[in-house]
Length: 91
Image (cartoon, rainbow, N blue to C red; front, top):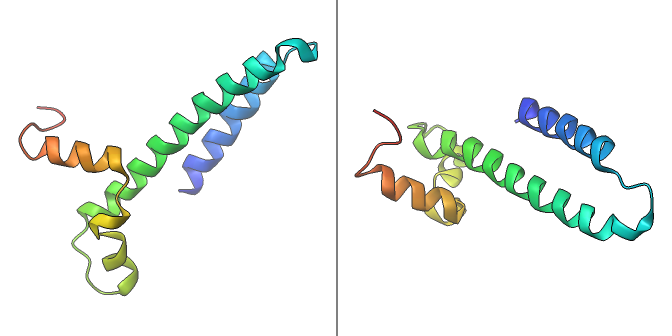
């Protein structure tokens, strides 16, 4: 997770430096675009990390067991897991 977070922080800094408006007039639009982009990226990172827990067969601690319960799986990942039961993500 640390590497994912570092990469996203670096990407955020780059996007801010590239798109920071000169005046306040377009700040709300730029901020909304930034928030949308990084909300999406963070959610995909969470899906990716959560997938490791869900696919794990570890049963040696409550921590691993808790992270495998369906209640803790993000909705998009749950949908993908259901799809992948019948259609693998790649050949």
